[in-house]
Each structure stands twice: as C-alpha cells, then as structure tokens.
Image (cartoon, rainbow, N blue to C red):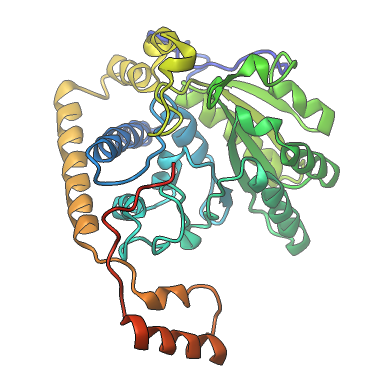
Length: 370
C-alpha cells in the first residue's frame, strides 16, 4: 500500500471479503465491541454531568472509538503510552478503572492526580500510561525519547503516542519523527485524523495530500487506515508493532475518522462546520462493527441491552463514589512529587496546618476557566 491508499477491512454495511477477514476469536471480537460501547456510554454520561454542572469540563470522543480500541489492542502490557486527551477507550483497554476516569473529572480525593491536573488529563503510572499534556504535540518528542531509552536498555517493548491532526502542525511533531527516524526508535506515531483541530479544518493545516505521506520525509512507513474500522486499525497497528519489536523502526499511522461532537464541552462546533457531522453518521464505527458481529451471529439485541445496562450501572456506582469523595487534603500539595519529603517542605506543611487545618472547602463561586 502507498501512503495515499486507505486500508479498510469492514465496509460501511458491515461486510468483509473472506480474504480480508483476520479470523479473530469471537471472544476477542466481542471484547472489542464492548470496549467501544463502554467508551461511547462514558462520553455521553460525562457530557451530561458537565451540562448539569456536576463537573466543570469534558473532552468527548464520540465517533473515534475504533481508533482508540483498535490501537490499544495491538500493544502489550510493558509497552509505554503517551496518549492524547481524547482516548478513554485506550485507557480502559489498558486496564484503567472506570471510577478513576470519572473521579479525575471531579478532581477530588478519589482522583489519582488529587485535582492537580485538568479534567480528562489522566495518568496511570502502573499501566505505563504517561500523564496527558495540554500543550499540543509536546508528548511526541517525549515518546521518541522513551523509545530511544528502550533501545539503550535492549528491551523489546515499544512506545505508542497518540495525537490529532492538529498535532502534526506542531514543531514537536517534526522533531519527534525526525529523531525517531534517524535512530530507528520503536515508536508507533498514531494520528487520529478527525478532520478538525478545534475549528481549523484539515485542508487549512497542511498542503500534503495525506498525513501518512509525511512519514517518507522522516524515513519511516506512512500507513493510512480507515479509523472507523476497528479491525483495520488493529491490523495496521499490529503490523507496525511487529516492525518496531523487530528493530525496524517507527511507523506513522494516519487513522481517518471524524470528531462527531465538540472539541470539548466548552466548544460549539455548529459555529464553524455546519451539518458536516451528519455525513459521517453512516460511517459510525460502533454501528459498522455491530453489523459485522450480527452478520457473524455473534451479537444480538438482547446482548446489546444487557451490555448497556451493565455499563450504566458501573458508571452510576463510579459517579456515586466520586461525588461522595472529599476535597484533597492540604497534605497532597507536598506528596507524589519527591520520594522523600525534605525537612524544609515538611516545615512548610506543618506551618500551613497550623493556620489552615488539614483540609479546605471548595469555593462555591469558583468557575472552571475553560
């Protein structure tokens, strides 16, 4: 395939040519679908919570579930991930608990980051998922550095870094890919081309015919895949992972998809793109994969209803836990940074406790800045 061809396995009708079907086990396929549905249901619920004023901010990923789940399944447990903030499906596939994803949006004591990060900016060190960065593209260079470290240590694990089409306009995209190409670092550069960098369409971001074509300039393969086809994403990422583990270097993968919702809960996409999202409804990755499963007698309406109820109950429980949690104590200002708190910081903490107590109440008049 060239960088302008697009790999597709499942058509929009859910059908697959026998020669293209990867022949995955039914349980594996069902796990894929359940993870995609869990991602969609989480998005819907969290946006509702934000509109109700119960959380301050959220970044939805409706329409991009296949790109997240398909890429995550190509990775192994000891691989490292530098994610974008629009990838909850990837986190759950790596083992992130739903209650931790929900708690992060409340930013209280149940949040692993103890409210220090923005909402939807997760970090799971035990899952080799590096903290999300708000500045666009900065994590691309960091991922390359981690890949080079894997080489120096003689390890066979790799690094996956996910970013949007807007991220390819950053200086760090050039620096990261250039260095990875030179050193043959084992990095998967995963671009979710959802057509919009907030309000800037892809045609105003680059003159290249495709983003995948940019790989050639850095000495690495550029692969273009239907990002709404979970099997195609899985195959492309698995092939790239095999290359990286064999010492053949990085791959740039452009996953063609669409951001159906707003850039964030603070965005109104109708102001800049009209009804374009309607054109992508028939390309919905979940609808397409459901048709594929139904054609193979692997899914039914009864299973669908059971899945939805089960996942909703899990979210209800997670939300109750998060809403009942207290605000982070003042002590958390001094923890999780240094392995051992030095005496001068301990003294500052003790002085703070004397004047403020061990905790603080949230300001009811405070507004989220975005």
